[in-house]
Length: 206
Image (cartoon, rainbow, N blue to C red; front, side):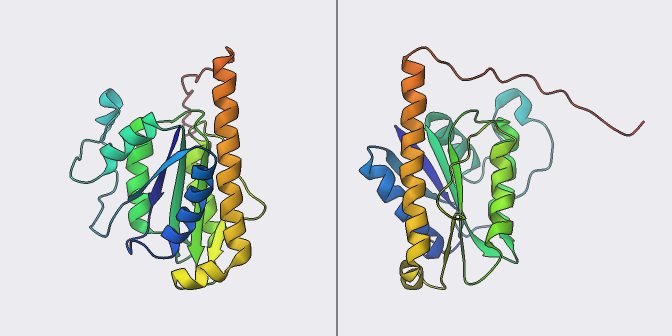
């Protein structure tokens, strides 16, 4: 069992990485392997809605880690996405990255997912709402905790001092491990997840 974790911070091993590491530690303690993937600090092009991915499940642009991440999520049992808060929203590069990941694949149905965000002060719940929408349109159960999935601080050392935030991260890891194991037990006993129906598309302009 494995969980893929996407670090949406361009600053590498800083506050967002610290939060993801706390989640990963608890997953590891519960027998779940983890891999943290950095999107890096190079420009990430946005989706151009060319629909080339409809036939392949992969993005037509192959000059960054988008297609690699799609493959890793396909093979994984769960997903965690972490982002710093920029202007009360996730990092813009991460949004461009995720637009292409989720548009190309359409859905990663029934894989538990969680969004975690880090901020100096505010904008965490607004950023969580943006990230959670990738999951809710993709049939992915959202893993919650004891509070909003956020940590506060301007440095990794300050984040570590956010005891409530760090406890929240640890509980995300435990809850995700439990849910993944429940899903696997269900499958082993013949209880398959609901079938993903073909979407009914409506255009309200007549």
